Length: 142
Image (cartoon, rainbow, N blue to C red; front, side, top):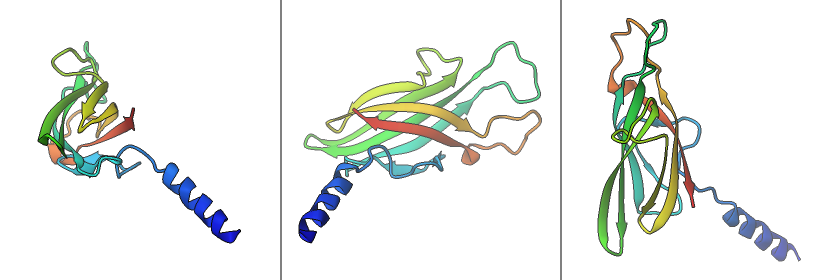
């Protein structure tokens, strides 16, 4: 009987395996690469960022936007795949993407949701560089 209980718990643990990335709350740093769960040979890299949001402490007539470029890399039966995904929060348009993107990659369907680009710009901050940026990205397997 104890064997069956152990097998049941082991099966539940495997079934409850989360989808998404191998990092949860801490975000993805600029130029960092994370592994997409459930697709062992697929990775996502926070490749580039452009931040044109209105800084804190300034009154702007336009809220601005923060756009990121993500690089999806993977291996499928067809060979290696590299695909750039553009995402944006704020005042976005077709060239910068949106905060939610659905992609089929390496034979799997994913939904990417960009919820934050940090740090938020501050007026007079001359120390802001791309290396200080991180993003909060939710990745759901469809």
